[in-house]
Amino acid sequence: MSNNLIVLAIETSCDETTISIIRYADNSLEILSNEISSQVALHAKFGGVVPNLAAREHVKNISWIFEQALKKAALGMKEIDLIAVTNGPGLIPALLVGVNFAKTLAYIWDKPLSGIHHIEGHIYANFIENKISGISNNQLPISKKIPRSQNSKKNSKKDFSSLIENSLNIKFPILCLVVSGGHTQLVFMKNHLNYEIIGQTLDDAVGEAFDKVARILNIGYPGGPAIAKQAANFQFSIHNLQSNPASKIKDSKINLGFEIRNSKFGIKFPRPMLNKPGYNFSFSGLKTAVLYETKKNSGLLKNKKYLVEVCHEFQQACIDVLVSKTIKAAKQYKSKTIMLAGGVSANQELRKQLGEAVSSQLPMTNYLLPLTELTGDNAAMIAAAAVFRWQKMNSSQKKKTFAKWQDLQTDANLKLK
Ligand code: KG4
Ligand code: ZN
Image: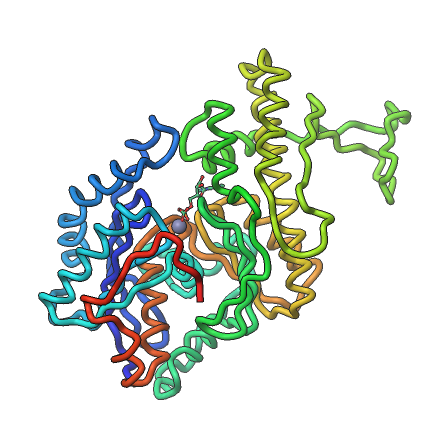
């Protein structure tokens, strides 16, 4: 079994054209290059991604992104062992550009080609140690430190999957909260590449809800970062109970001597499905609640404090439901590791509050986050997933499962399995 593998991966499922080269060696995954051309500015004026426009941009950008990825990694055709590409789910016109580019490369270079599920990529972003950025584990918002293996050389003959797992202190079973523009799922993993979806959204994905609410509030696209930025300005105001004892908090168990008042406008949004059994989510009603609130008070939308409070309360409603269901599921399924994945996992409050809930309610459970720069769509995560898929197979499985370039298909609704 090879202990050294170099993968070139391509991702064009939505509005980012991205190509990455990563190396698996010495017990870790190292990013050699991860080039991304984002079309966010182009789609912003439409308030969402326009599939044919996205495809046209991918065609325009993919060749120079490819050249840049090779140049930055200082590698050429000879050194690449495997080509990987996102083949679904996503926008078909956009996916086709990446898949056809990958097929052409596999044909010309005579390399194996691996089709990777986009969400599998997001999940495996958690397994990448990014040496380029210089960000260390110490800078994770919740410092569950991830010890590096002390004796990677000594262990180098063991199965590589368990080596990576050990080096990151990742223990199975894992519960991964996947939160992106298209998905909101709780994925239970008994082992690598083994997925059971134990809950998912019944309507909008949480990222989609952020985007739609930002459109209602007219604060820009993509909505997630725009709402998070406004919500960060929310200020809790502390009121002294001595000066106004009548304002005691009714259900407070401990009399702190002060009251934390966090609402100037009294905005309260629902926490959909919070107390429903099971692990499904729903965010479309929450989005409608924001619409009604802002229609009722349209005159206040120019008031900065009002906007900040709407954003904060909406974000907190999402986080409350996501955190509560994740903790509940982790307890029932006895998960040893909780991970976050997908574009919404860039949300600092979600990262922080889920981490706090894990520390207080499941102190023996590991908590793992992807590096912030790997939360959005990128090809490094696709390459990481491909390394695991490749290495888990024996040579006949490799031949059977890894598509010859002719066989690989795109699938807008590809299932995670
Ligand atoms: O994973 P991703 O880049 O694309 C998909 O696979 O869908 O996720 C994009 C989603 C968008 O809905 C965007 O608004 C959201 O991730 N997002 C955020 C944040 N950054 C991006 N949502 C909340 N807070 C953020 N900081
Ligand atoms: Zn994504």
